[in-house]
Image 1 (cartoon, rainbow, N blue to C red):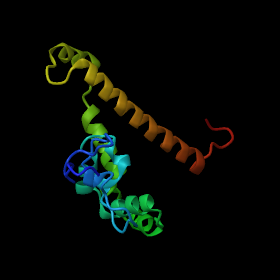
Image 2 (image 1 turned 30 degrees about the horizontal axis):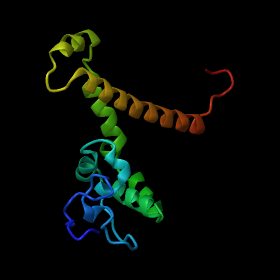
Image 3 (image 1 turned 60 degrees about the vertical axis):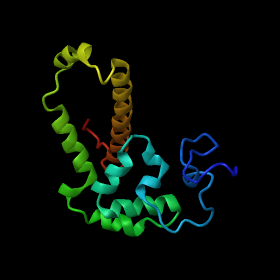
Image 4 (image 1 turned 135 degrees about the horizontal axis):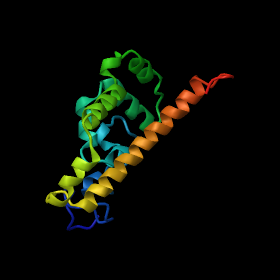
Amino acid sequence: MSSDISRHNPCECGSGKKYKDCCGAPKGEVTSMRVKDINAFELTPGLADALTESLDASYQEYFVAACSGSSTKEAERRIAAIPEDKRYLTRVLDSLDRALADFDTKTAMLDLPHMQTRQPEAIKRYLGFRLRQLQMLLDAVGDYVGEKYPPTAGHS
């Protein structure tokens, strides 16, 4: 570390993180972790904070265990006991229902020329990102259904 860099300054490696959270982070065994420290959740702005605030602690235990290489079995057992109406996937599906219940492409297109804060190029990138997320979810559910409910002879 240069003598003129503070732990609170941006790291010299160019990551955009503070030095103390990057190259200046203490090296050693991970004994605890917060969901917002997990890089996988940095894909969407605010996702880490939303997950930390809204997910059942069992999910957070699972992420911490998985990222630190520990066993996830106990967290998986706790997740299995969560009532369906409190599950993460239920929230995702309910959110999609609310968001798309009255969706109409022609109506949305009436707004597009008048958007000032969100530019059309940014909207396109955002929708592409969300489409990739939905495709990953659809693929995962499809794989699960294919494994757990294989097609039977005579049915399509």
